[in-house]
Length: 61
Image (cartoon, rainbow, N blue to C red; front, side, top):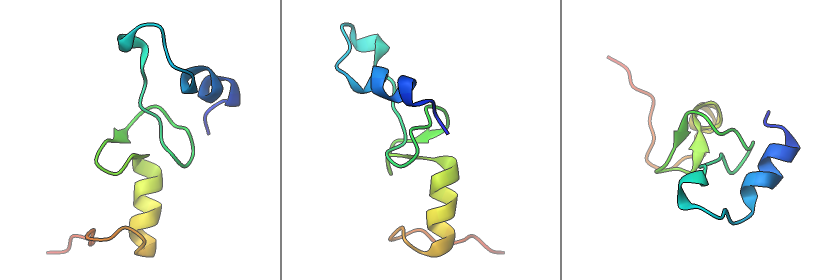
């Protein structure tokens, strides 16, 4: 998803703290990052449907 150059560029330690960008550990996506799990919403949804995230259940009512 994310360009490899962006992932590599922001993977290095930044000179200023405000430049730090949270990225998905699986795909490198920078937007819609879920801090508790360390992944983006798309990867979160896929893993939750597969049942690979402990403690996450599909809501139904």
